[in-house]
Image 1 (cartoon, helix red, strand yellow):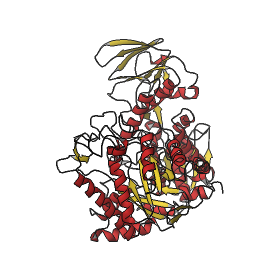
Image 2 (cartoon, helix red, strand yellow; image 1 turned 90 degrees about the vertical axis):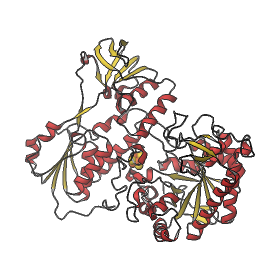
Image 3 (cartoon, helix red, strand yellow; image 1 turned 180 degrees about the vertical axis):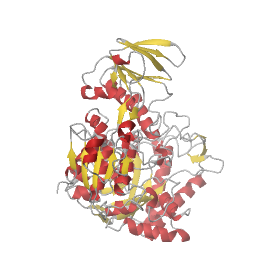
Image 4 (cartoon, protein in one colour; image 1 turned 60 degrees about the horizontal axis):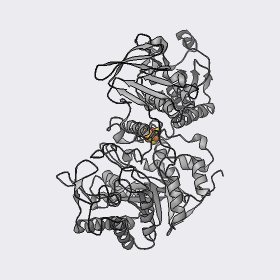
Length: 640
Ligand code: SF4
């Protein structure tokens, strides 16, 4: 076995975990119709069958599934019992996550340490001693109910936007009683809460406590503060879980309007809480688990083997592929579907407009996307034109149905625009996904014909029963005078380290903005000219905030001229009309174009009429992301 440490047992108080993999609880998209057959995006059946040692569910998700306020009230018990059974159906432990969060009152105010502005931007109401006792009592009751109902362990959420975080942070905690001021005082409420829960559930019941190593909010608390807290409660918990950041949607701290520190994006290093987790492991006696950008089994094995942590907790990666543990255990890591960290699966990313997974069509659709497709009644001859992500996903899916597939690709390699993922610091996840698709294709009977430009005649001669057209899109050459002095932005990727000097990027969408960051991080003087009022305006909310954080934290950030338009491109720079209407000249050694893509519709249309079973997928239908390419292509191919 390649990962002996990762798949070694771990004793946590009175229970034995079969391995070191914990499936994180997930936020739940409230608008979805929840049921015990689709689990509303919690992937509970797959996560349990996928081999995690512990599967977590939050009390909110459980009560949501039950359609009740409480997960163990009389009319919720049938559903909760079924969920519990599902969570443990493959021998894993079921963990109930209990929140330690301030109540929201009818007038919109929220409980917190002091009167003032809450991190949500609303009014924060100082908790009274009585209110604090009630909150502790409520947590104890829920923990006892969870234990009595049959949950193997409880996870107390003391991280992110919890009362533990708020009381520990001087920015919100202005109290002058024994719960404010000194570090000892600011940790007192959380210590009392944890002590009370321990007392309520008894010494033998396993307790996991999640904390944020820091909040990434100014004037909150430091890692030293958090270590102090952990050490002060190490006798009352069994295993700590190290996370980072908090959910912060507005308020006075306007830089923190989304939580991309807890749910990391491509701009954050993988496993970026590991250093602090290792410090906790060294300096306390509690078992330690880490969450946040955990995805690579090699890195997990190394962290455990080196004694940095005892266990790993995975969130989004188990959405992308809930069978990650089983595949890693069987040394089949090439079969793991990599998570892109695009956060489309997190409902706040698109305000519920498109809460799907970019790489796993089954996510939230367990009812109609089977784990394995059945073979088609009749094997068809399927031709797929284009070897980008849509074409490859279509080929893989159609192959699963048992069809005979010919994939035609004009260039000498598969991948389409994902081939740019070979370059740059922020495209490692995308590169992994492209390589995953290529590797999977190589193990099918799909006949891949590279360097083959499909024409209607060629395709007709192949006599397909079904045809999928995935011919992609062209980068737009804008009608700006002097555009011939510029080059397409993506063409720079293969020579990222060689492009030097003053660089102007025309267009600040995701491609232009990411490239700007790559080039400025390499020491160049980069300016992005963007007509809209924000960078990456069409990308999801969380991506945008991850991007903005990365720009803000860069040692040499690119400059953004928003609300501005390029009027002319000259050999030595660009003429720009800025947001005040003033004309300016920006000298430049390189001018790069990133103004979007246009679907190759005419080309795609030319393939119609060969067979009635013809469908366009991917960018040629509508320029979009991997999410649309994967999902649209899956459904077309699955229904052939
Ligand atoms: S939607 Fe994106 S972030 Fe979420 S699991 Fe899928 S690939 Fe990962």
